[in-house]
Amino acid sequence: MSILRTLAGEATDNAFLANLDMLSVCLDIAMVICAFNFLAFLYRVLRGPAMADRAVAMDSCGITVMALIVIYSMRQGTDLYMSCVLVIAILGFIGMVALSKYIQSGNIVNNTNIILNVEEAEDLKKEADAAEVIQQKAEAAIQKTAEKNVRNVRKQLNRSKRNK
Image (cartoon, rainbow, N blue to C red):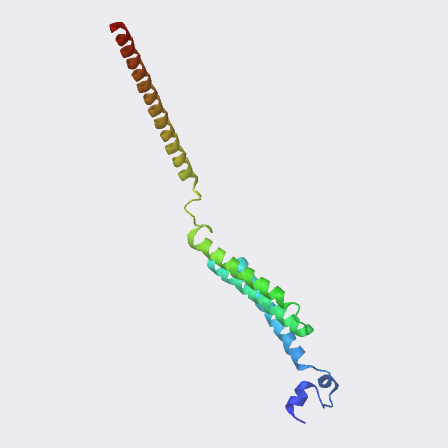
């Protein structure tokens, strides 16, 4: 009797080994190992000394969840759960990129058109108010100049009418 047949559960006198499917046992062991890894990563997420450690641990949790789903899918003999694994992988990648951007610069969207600082917004408002005051003064000066020009033209017209 060969070792492979014994491991596969074929041609053995032992009742326990006869019903033992080696792949299912290996998958069960892998699930237990993944579950312990998940708990270790979860501990690092909760107690991590730095934000970067927590981010790496969260990414590792996502990978471990994906591994658990794949192992469960193999254990059940179906591929219905693989689309869930793909969605988790995509969301984990996007989340990790956003989190690393946040850790690096303090915000996720780095657009110069968006004002994120309150002090800068107040300074811009003061500048806009000052520009509005200057604009109003300029319009008043133009109005006065126009009125003065109109008076001068009327005076000239009145003089020209008197001279005729």
